[in-house]
Image (tube, rainbow, N blue to C red; front, side, top):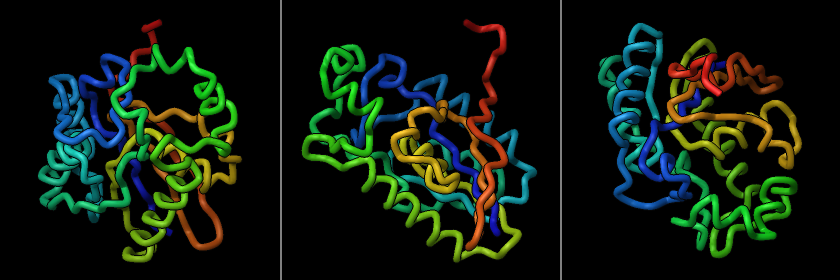
Length: 205
């Protein structure tokens, strides 16, 4: 049963502005995101991580590479770790979408939703879980490896391995640069850590 570290990429300006990035190309970490990526690398530099895998999007690669470098590894690009394809919603603001009827479906019954000209949440979950299973079989039982991905794929993966309904995955959290740890085997899975955020401040509102 390898242990998988699911790491969400660091902050970028779309997150800061409340805009849905989807698979927007050439979207890089901002200054805070780069600091988050460096903090992750420093925190995990002595962990016995065997491999670092990354979504092909720039913001994920820029989070994965400092960690891989600190470990003396190379970040390996895995296309199926990519963000959900949100189709026509790409580049739209949370503020505008919250006024739409579709937003309520996304938040309360995501199993019924497909993004216009994009993926359904079910398809995204099948993709990310299939990728994690493929990576799991590449590693030895006691291996630890890291996957740098995106918020919804990480939460969908956790929901699957915990046996949660897809309609409840929105109750989970995966903040920028956070670490979620799963112990995954053929017959059982355990959540070791969820949304461990190096920058979390208990005093903030």
